[in-house]
Image (cartoon, rainbow, N blue to C red; front, side, top):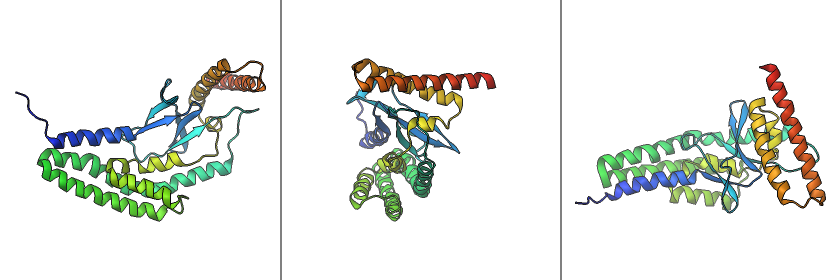
Length: 253
C-alpha cells in the first residue's frame, strides 16, 4: 500500500530547495567570489567547468547567510594591478553598512528555515499557517530596516522594490538578502589586487586559476593580433609573480 506524502512535507522540501537554489551564483570566466574574512579576504572560483550559458556555478555556503560575498573580476593589462586604497575603504564601508541588517536576517533565517519546518512537522497544516504568518512578519520587519538603508546603499526605488517583492513573495529568498546586496555591489578593485593582499599560499592559488583561464584564452586567440601579444605578456607576469610567491613561501618555511 502506497502512503501519500502529506502536502506540508512537500512544502518543507520546497522551502529547502528554494533556499539552496537561491544560493547559486553564476560567474563569468574572469570572475571570482571574494569573502571578507576577518581583517582580510578569501577568494573562491566555483566550478572549473562552465554549466549555464558559458558561466561557472558557485554555491554560497547555506549556513552563512550573514557573510558578505562580493564579485571580483580580473582584466588583462600592461602590468599587475595595485589596489586603490579609497576603493578598498568603500568596500569595507559597504560591508559595515549591510551588516546593519544582520540581526533581522538572522531572525528571518531562524523563523523560515528552522521554526517553520519544525512547526509543520509537529502540527501539520496548523503549524504551517502559524509558521507562515510569523515568517511574513519577520520579513516585513526586515524590509522596514532595509528601507531605512536604501539611500545609503544607493539603491533606486525600482531596485528596492524588486528585492522587497522577492523577499515577500518567497521568504526563503529573504534569508539571502545581505548576500544579494553584496553581490550587486560594483567593486573597483581587480581580483589580482586582492590576491596581492592575501597570504602567499592563497595568493598562489588565485594566480594559478587566473593563469589557467589566461592560457585558455590564448589558445582561442589569433596569434597575429596585438591582443594575443598583450595577453601573453600578462600571462608571463602572472607566472613570474607565482614563482616569486612560491620562493618566498619556501624561504619562510
